[in-house]
Image (cartoon, rainbow, N blue to C red; front, side):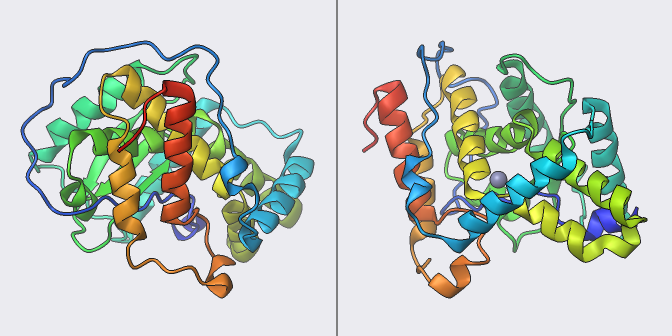
Length: 282
Ligand SMILES: [Zn+2]
């Protein structure tokens, strides 16, 4: 199963901005509230981006559905996959987990609060780990395991942003993005033999499932949970606006992007918030 570590079945969110110190606010800052009725998840904002990765993503999704329609992946399997992934990532020193860091309690609280707010939850069990990585601003998830780098935590300017980010990672699990990735890996194994022989194809199949729509869906999902907990859903705007600084559009590199550009993401989220929550983000 070495390939699991090598394959990037992790969904990367991006980064927050500016280093600030958190207040020790592991309690809810706002008042819990219900979601508005008739929520709409719109993807129009990325429809005409013309990104080649979107076209490829769609093609891969179709192929993925065709090859995996009779393959089942249970929640338990996803959790086991996550455990195996973590074991290998630690063994191979890809991940160094800061298990004694004080931030663990804070992350556990945020995760527990978010997980409680799921509607029709999967049977996936969640656990969050801070990674001793102060250089890479990222968060990853697989099979209910969420890994967040110290750089990402330090970059976030508010709990509101951390809630949205961790909620995003939960979204990838709850919305079946991980499940689909594993299904496609299973299909590869079925057709082509052992994992080890299939590295490149499996990687291609997996990355095909990380399209812009998945990323936005996870963003929307994370915001829904953040809203329900009473946190500021607009704070994510400054997060992406800041990320967009210095992030030029390059059509050649767009081909490789698995995530929407940060400025597109900001616009999509502002539209989403305005449409569904009737809140205008300043
Ligand atoms: Zn993501």
